[in-house]
Length: 411
Image 1 (cartoon, rainbow, N blue to C red):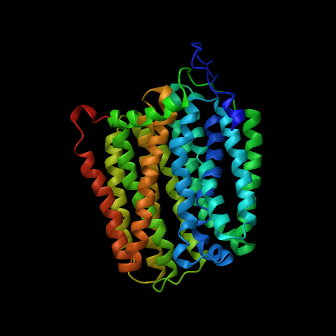
Image 2: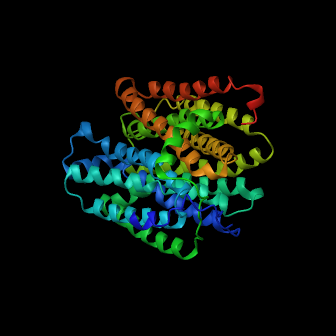
Image 3: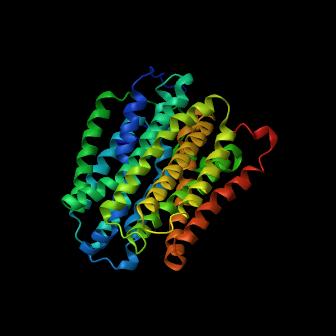
């Protein structure tokens, strides 16, 4: 990180950073980069059984395999992502990618639970490079194209999250879970080389120091109603999303359906269709329908859990119902993410990385809470309790949205 700090903007230098020439292909490149990187947070989710068995990790503690990368990611959103408002962005991106590939490679050789869990936390910490790249795209395209560019990158992120589960299950079936992390380390190496060659430098505006940057985070959150609302709306929806995908593999592999790991992976793969929603969400934003789209996304999440309750047996029809619920859920959450990020990116450009970090940290906290509550609810009461939890969270968000003042209804 020392090399990165050398690129910090001099607070005493009043010279504004140079403008970046628009790059038409930037959204597609960064969509791939973000999708490949964010997948590192998800690869272990369907593999907690074989990983825990290989490491001798007690069954009660195997949830840490998924929780610790998310915890590292959440911490990085608050401590590392804001550095994009202080340091030269390309150098920061490359440093985090190089650290990520080292941690992934070491993770694939870990033989002790403590070693694995510590490295998993660091993988999550460095994976927050995704949230440096996401606002980066807004500097690389004309303002008129910003909505479509953000939607493209968000689609890449959602595809990465959704494809990671079936991919890691397939690789583990063919070889082993360790191979998945080695493949990912190779992908990080290729990604770092490509971005080093084609990504332009971006210097943030001068005038900040790191302590000032961190102090400003709380001030920005509590003084920016649009940010708070958008973050809390999506926290509720992402908590429902996490609740579904935490309990669904247990439900599908249990007595009712009896699916193998490959069968569960197939349903997760079908849910990828929901990642096609961001372009439609972007068009709604462009037509001034953000609020209407947000309400629709919340109601669709409720509908997804209601649909899942129609799967009352283990038949192929019931499996089709679960697939439909997964597609509706994934589409609604993906769309709402676009609504939120497009809204906060319309705020102060010099704070964009901090705004994005606060937004992401808030809704990932919601996701962690949703996962924890879902696991408990399923263990105690079964899928019905998970469905009630998942439907209740967007209804809570909808009640909060109803308190918007009339002048704020554009958000």
